[in-house]
Length: 193
Image 1: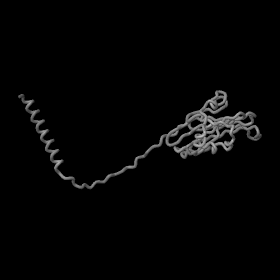
Image 2: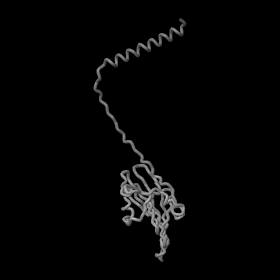
Image 3: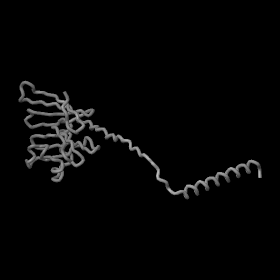
Image 4: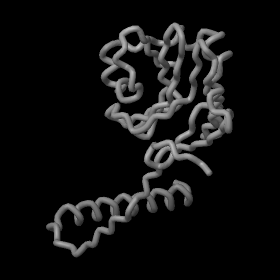
């Protein structure tokens, strides 16, 4: 055997012997009670940020392009689940058709939907916030048109901000208004000043 081979063989033999002795010693000793302190550090769970999908809710996008009429019709089960009666005070009228136009956000235990009402002489769209049990938290009317044309509401949703333009021909002093809203931490639409 060469000197290098002898040295290597001797080294690995010693290593093997020490390892076997260490395993035997740890297995033969009874467990002793040890004083231990377990520190539990609070882990900050960051909620998923709410980012609303950008949208323009106007006559061209909703009516002319048939986005409202071609969207998913709300059936009787969804009608109750989505609290349509709480969203629309005149929901008892049987000739209205309700639609889920779009989902603007889903996550963090919440869902934000665009709910639309279709009728021959007027159309309305609301943005509605729900919790994970589909409980309605808040809603805001974001689109309105009627056959007479005296009142209209159009909205732009951009950078998590709702900019609602209202035109009311019956109001002689202020026939055009702009209101801005944002979604607060409680998933309610808060008016910005």
